[in-house]
Figure 1 (tube, rainbow over the protein chains, first blue to last red):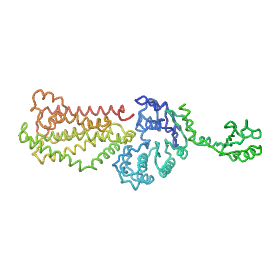
Figure 2 (cartoon, chains in turn brown, purple):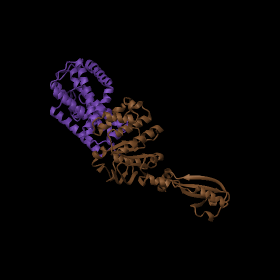
Figure 3 (tube, chains in turn purple, brown):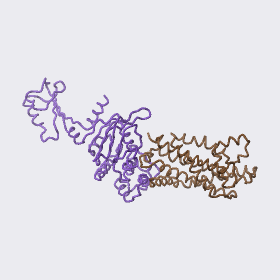
Figure 4 (cartoon, chains in turn yellow, red):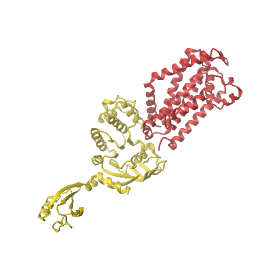
Length: 309
Length: 253
């Protein structure tokens, strides 16, 4: 099956000469959740804006559901729901009216049952007659999500949806996302919160300086992250790994003042107990022990650093 | 044609108007009454008649045009500038709509509001002076065309404006003088010949003249020319808006 979203060599150079996208290629399968990670100014929002029609690409091509976002913009945009990064809502309008406006803009007849279901799911039903400016920041964010979903999109862009919102909303939103995934909606999410990507994404893409550095299955990334290191600080430094311990994946560190043991946390046996027993059998005295684990965040940071270098 | 989108934008814009319906109604009533007190009574007592029409009645078409033109521009420019200012424009830009649908929605609502105000002024004026409208349909047609064309112009100003100052600039510096010098309160024939010629370069003259003809069958320029001028102006505005949407100028990055 063709990917629901295809981006081919998409470039965007702003008027001032800033190259926000330097030839992005991206295929997204229907029904998957992709987390797009990247530092500020990496091009996340520009990419989303270009796909949604808010920004005009300099060159390249993008299709949604097979429809070109520029030439078949009606069909392409009709499939897309967008939750923008900034809270942009008309302050004096009632919640239900502003949500209803979006459905109309997408050429769909008003659907009260859907409106009720959606507002209830987002805990907005009690606030349906409130004006937007009477709502808290978190509630406004919910309104934006409701607006993005009211026209039943097949592809949903969530641009930093949980930036600055409380834990409760974040959890609610993850539930909504899980629910949408069940309905087969494709979700592209940009976020600063690595844990968010860990919690809900199927795949993770890292973007920096307008280029996609990595797209990988989250589980594969997680297994890379599953590697853990045990650092054993020694009372007496050694010049090489003692012969009795050659069977272990050990490396010297701190000029021989420490040994580093790498192991897989997902494995049945990590070998730690045996290693420690063998260490004391070899007469090596330990001063301290510590463990360290690569997180998605570290992978992300090192990738972005490499890119900057 | 995405008619749901047109209707949604139109209704949403009209809702803003209905939220402040009292203000929308009262302010033209008060300003019209003031004009009648100042122009009609104070000046009118010295100028009895202009080309066979009592001065009080003579200024009614100009007065309506003055308000309708200003209202159309400010309604439409604000309607599109405000979403740009608060960021909600993203919604229209990312919706499956073309420029015609967006324009009909926004400009239609802006024109409806100023049409309403024009009719309120007409109603208020009829309390002060005896008014007979020679060609009611033509009067309405001129009024509607004026509302639409200047709402289109306002729409362009709203897209062009980068801040609230610029939003006020064109109406204040260009439109107000053109309207005042366009024969709202006098007949062009009352001017010295040189000024009569200069005045003919003012597009508002053609509007007011045509509109006044619909009331009193008396005009500064021919009705056909008036109609041609306003139609041409409307077409020009539509063309500019088409170009703006095609290039994304000041709308899309």
